[in-house]
View: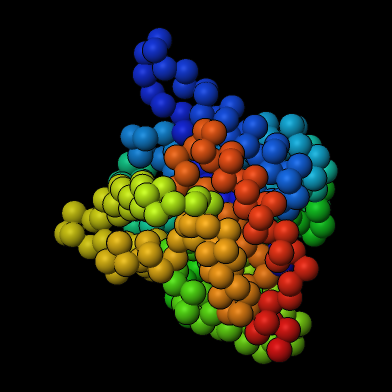
Length: 348
């Protein structure tokens, strides 16, 4: 198995009493240490208009991180294509890939938070069509050396050659967030990698991996367990009180997310993993919080389900010293026992 990070950084808005950059600097230092501890990658979110400082300019932040690291792969989880000019995004992503020596993992999605679509004045009903058109332009921009034009419903470009070229050929690996069977099969049919969300239960993870694997094999290709990344919240602690406090922090964060994703008619969008059940039950089923042995048992469940690549979100730690301690303990007391373990169902 291999392990990466998943998450965000926080830049608080405020006056002279706040250092808005502190959260970003802590995020950079956290990732530098993760590279030294043996983590393979980091995947960073894109969100807007939250009121609590989630990362918005993902490519910019990863470019800075790329300059401070040497091996860590730099992932987006995800760039929401309906909001972006696809040519400008292709240029920015290719620049990051080039400067980092080919370390970009380009994770993309359609978006799910109502407040973001409302803020950009883009109807949520256009998300699928905008996503498909943007992806078509981005792939063409990365793979066509001759000038091309595009006349679509949402974007028009005339006689352009997109620069610079990306370092990875034919283009950086594309990762897609998906949760439903239909969307998972579509990701596999297109030959892209799959990102599974952090709130899906282990049983749902197993089902999603099985669907993806069957579709990959139906296309005549061999399934690679490392082409599916499963996100899990993780916090290493020793007492029940620490665990409960961390679970409450995560639950509060989940409730904020759901509020931002709720439409005016009261419809709640659970996100790509469609985890729309009782938030507390979803929390208990998905989070890996507790002792190293407890977390090891949760990882064993994922390995049995066929997971080979796990992205750790340490947000439940609350950040700072607590988060750094949990990261070190996960690497030294948990991860060490799984790096050579083969995903079971994938091996079968």
